[in-house]
Structure formats: structure tokens, C-alpha cells
Amino acid sequence: MIKVEEDARDENLTYLFEWNEVVIGKHKDKFAEFLRRATGSITLDLLDLKFTNDSKTITCNFISDADHIIWTARMTGNNENTIATLSITNDLGKEVYRFQMIIKEEPSNRFPRYRLHHLYFKDNRSTKAKRRRGK
Image 1 (cartoon, rainbow, N blue to C red):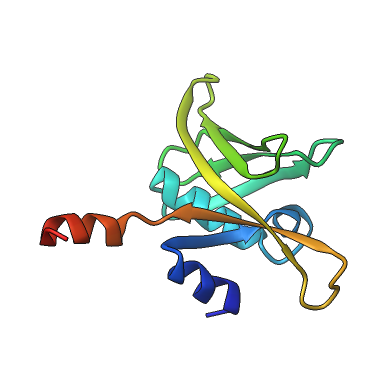
Image 2 (cartoon, rainbow, N blue to C red; image 1 turned 90 degrees about the vertical axis):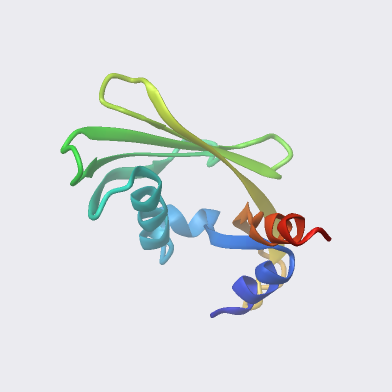
């Protein structure tokens, strides 16, 4: 487990991936895994993964083994760069899934002046467990 994942657990967050690394780097597989889990697929093939011109939106098409249709994923960061919304539409253009993720801007360990944009999910498991225990 990397440090950013350990820190996320302390804040009841689940670390997903780094924004810039989804398209051009090592987190492409993490993004594909997230889409696979979101759609209930066993395997998934990413097609034409790319940034828009302003780098505020990541789009791709993908094929799921579950139904062999082409899905479209569109992930857009808000103007404040604090929330990203992922919309997944089916081959008819109907939105089937929608997720909101937290964006945390953090300094790079290797290049301190470079800012990373890590995406997280809020993990409600501990909150639900506390409610069940009556705390």
C-alpha cells in the first residue's frame, strides 16, 4: 500500500487514482478497474482514452464483457478542482451510472512544485458501523 492510500484510510476515504496519470501514465489500469467494478464486468477493454483540450475532462469508450456494447465514460472536474463527476452512458446515450469523487490537490514527492490531483471516494463503512453499534 502506498502512502497516499494509507493517509486516505485515516480519513475514511478510498484512494482511486491520480487525474493526470489516468490518460498518460500508470493509473490507466486503476481507472479501468474502477469502471469494471462500477459496471459489474469481469473484463473491460478501454478504447480512445483522452483528455479534452482544457484537461478538465477525461473521456473514453469501453467494451464490457457483460453485454458487449460500447459504453462511454466522461469524468469532469469542477471549476474549483475539488469534485470530479463520472458519468457512464450506454450505447443509447442513457446515463446508467453517476459517481462523485473528491479531488485533493497535493504536492508531488519527486517534484515539489508540481501539484498532483488525487481522486478519492468517501468511505462510509466506519460511519455505518458506528451507527449500528449505537455510538
